[in-house]
Amino acid sequence: MATLERIVEADLFVIEHDVLVRQSIEEYRSGKGNFADYLIGGLARHAGCSDTVTFDHALAGHARFTVLR
Image (cartoon, rainbow, N blue to C red; front, side, top):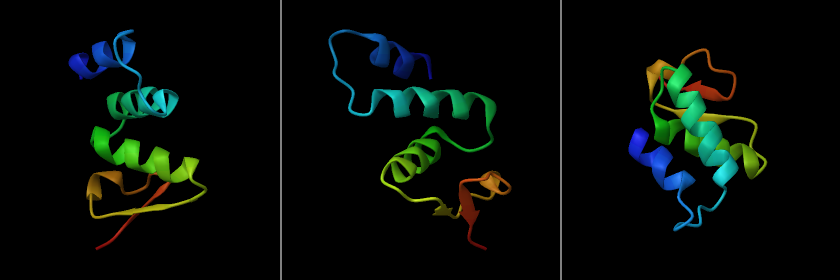
């Protein structure tokens, strides 16, 4: 995760939706899902979706995710 944080902080790169990427990093640190799940959920929310469906049972109980069984 430290490498991703350094990339986001570097002036060399332009990160699309950098605020969402940073929020996803924070959710990953404190959550049970993986970074990609939180990023996908954040992008979906940004696009107007209120819920993201996943197979990742680690996200059970998270307000923005519905886990398929």
